[in-house]
Image 1 (cartoon, helix red, strand yellow):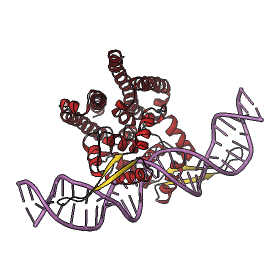
Image 2 (image 1 turned 30 degrees about the vertical axis):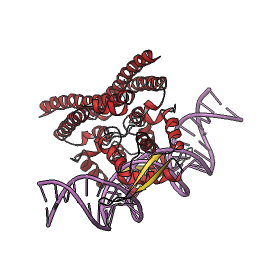
Image 3 (image 1 turned 135 degrees about the vertical axis):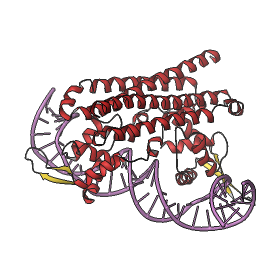
Image 4 (image 1 turned 120 degrees about the vertical axis):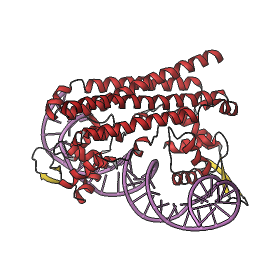
Length: 186
Length: 186
DNA sequence: GGTCCCATGTAACAAGTTACATGATTCC
DNA sequence: GGAATCATGTAACTTGTTACATGGGACC
């Protein structure tokens, strides 16, 4: 259900094509949501059918033609409705494949799990660096969309960074425990 | 794909019915994975068809009959294979509906978002308390399954607790910013 | 000549959600 | 009398994944 509101939300900033939206999911908000291209086209078609969005076909000569989507009033209403929803159950549905795997890791040599966690830690750190770099220049965005938008955006970045940092710290703690274990039994 | 390995992993501890597995997902490992009952029965049927698990039909008089599932050698092999998999892409696919919503929250009054985050913070804190309470007595589990299993289990708990604590702290930071904002413009 | 960008989709499949159906026993 | 526990599943639907298909223009 969230994907649809992600699309409506992006369209609330300005008209976009499916391709633009797909890029936005990858590049701008990929650290808290991701979506397949095929999923976006499917959802856009559904949104149009339900009258939440409309599009104009833009004819281009040097590039493929495109469908430029915009929010309808109904779509805007639904977006605001969703933003005011009291229900938070969705926020506590967790599926963490790393923890699932770690939970059963006694079936595999300790060294294997150390390398898994080392790898994980590095990827957390590089993800954090990447996010910091991508968002280091907030000022451009700030003047473009206004202070309020930038404030909320910063909060999501703070979460992203904090979460990666936590992941890296936790992984290191686990590695320490496992290395001690290895020395004992080695 | 992870669900299947979650089931195989649980069965590696001992024979279980679909109902037992469903309970385990809810109660024991619900803080890092969740699965619908219907999903588990479907997956068990598929695993049996593929020869990764087998079951005995246990006839009961006072309760409904049940299918007691056990791991086959093939299932055990596949589990260990998965535990040694190098690919970590799955661990970095993120879908966080709270951040998605927060990102677009400039369209809604500040007070609304303060109450959202306050609520979120409280639920993080209560989830942390719950997890701590549920796992306060590790000793029973430790003698039952051995030290190695308990070690990995503790690591997943540490993640769960840390993650909830981080969520609560972050939410409070956001609330502080929003309250300042409200006083300025109030 | 090869790859990336632009821009649209379809098709098949896997995974997750929600609701329904059955029925005895136990506990309050 | 009502809810919870035990125990199985089916059906319909939504969401997410992977692969395929098309085709011009730009850049190296």
